[in-house]
Image (cartoon, rainbow, N blue to C red; front, top):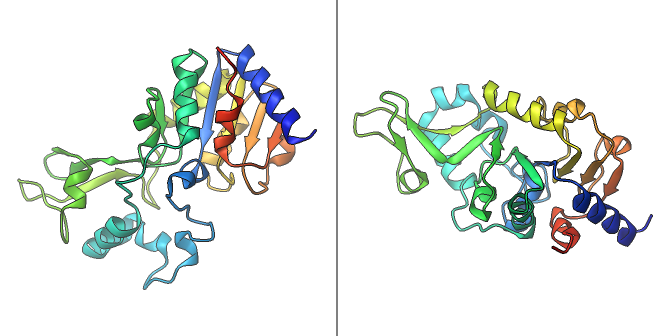
Length: 243
């Protein structure tokens, strides 16, 4: 099956379903100029005093708090990034009553910026930050414009609501993601290598026969796909059926 046939097959599945779930990773946002961790320009290819997975760990946050925030501000925040065609296509599918949920490993908030409303953020969001002492909420601008360790008016540390290494996922969000995938008719998995657990294990809950994998490179689960597209996730925009 050539790429045009695959696009047409995906277009038909989308047209025929009102129970689509999308599960995405870093590759969804690379076309918004947000580098992924493992790609050519990703964090894991760069040299730092400590490995990135150490600097983004809970223990490093506790023991080297100022260094954590210096790294976090310089390498994890992309305030100028805008939604790309993949984000916009998913928001359009929700608007048409077809996409039931977007499950994302990304923390950039671009799905919401595109207009998606039911977004399950497995790893949290850079747009939510809380005082660890009093619980006061702060937006992204507070972190961007802070220096050193960001402090609340009460003196507490303002911590980003993102899941660091060594921290567990929010169990309610994880449960909601499992339920959405289990009930989905069409599951579209895009922009993820499916190597980071427990998130990668979510596709094990899919019970349907329309599993679509969209990723530029191969994944270890390609043989499980009912439809495989080795393309950028923005190909979704080309597969929207006409209204």
